[in-house]
Amino acid sequence: MKQSISLFFALTVAALAFLSCSGKGGTLVECTFVEGSPEKVQILSSDLGIDTLIAVQGGRFSFRFPDDGAVTTGTFSFNDDSVIESFILDGSHLSYTYAGDSLSFVSSGGSGLNLRMKEYDSLQGDIYRKVLEDPDAYDEYVEMNRRMFEENKDNFLGVRAFMILSQFEDDEGQERLISELSPSVQRSPRIMKRLVDINKRRATAEGAMFLDFEVPQTDGSIKRLSDYVGKGKYILVDFWASWCGPCIAELPYLKAAFEKYSGEDFDMVGVAVSDEVADSEKAVSEYGIPWNQILGGGIIPSSVYGFNSIPQAYLFAPDGTILRKTGLRGEQLDLTLSEYLR
Image 1 (cartoon, helix red, strand yellow):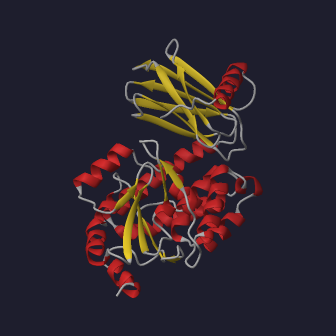
Image 2 (cartoon, rainbow, N blue to C red; image 1 turned 45 degrees about the vertical axis):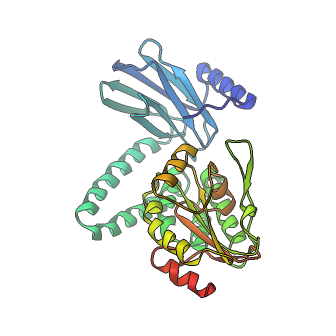
Image 3 (cartoon, rainbow, N blue to C red; image 1 turned 90 degrees about the vertical axis):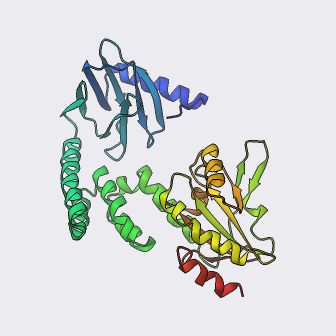
């Protein structure tokens, strides 16, 4: 995990370190290493902007996170992320013991949410194993998360259940579920981000004009979506990543479309999302991808267009209007393109 080098972050970490030592308030996390003690432990809370390393001293570490109303989470990890432990920041005292390859857990104080989360994790694991043997058991998995949502609308467990249930809902359905959460949970970072994404998707709905973004390149230049879109051609933009199996599975259909339609009226652009440039370049070479690429975009493209998964494909009209966001996968791709390109 990358560490921030900004002055703001450095001051934030210093303040949190002071709080960690002061023993006042917040969620205290500590771990005693009986054996296999690492030199350092990674402390992270993306919700609160915390990302730092702390030293293990005398076979032990402790860190105090600010209490944020049981709607945010934190993690600690070590041994190159081979051990990662997540928890809810609810004001608890979370105590761990690590012996070789085993991490045991005790919680005291707070809301008891961390114990309940472990119970849910165990139950979900049991149901997932059933799903592997019988796909029809997936309904049981969904129903368990519906119960979890109904029982935890005022804490992070409700947020986690929402993230699973949202996979089966359109934007209106997601907004309905969010409206059922308590006001404090609705203001939590992950829910706020989801609402932002919903609004961005509305701003980039079919019929809307494209939204531009720019990505700095390794040679110091800048690439923009507007370098390709809105220039008088139909443009198919494929948002992808080298690590994304479904993205790679789409390549035969994309190549067929490129070979059939590319020319004066049509072109394609790949936009790598959350992918290292070297990995993207390797995939372009290895799979022989012939169309233009915007690499190194990180989360910029998904932030602008509000999607949460890849692959995603958008078809833009010659003037930059978003024509289609659906019907652009697999065998449907050629059928969709044939509606506009004769």
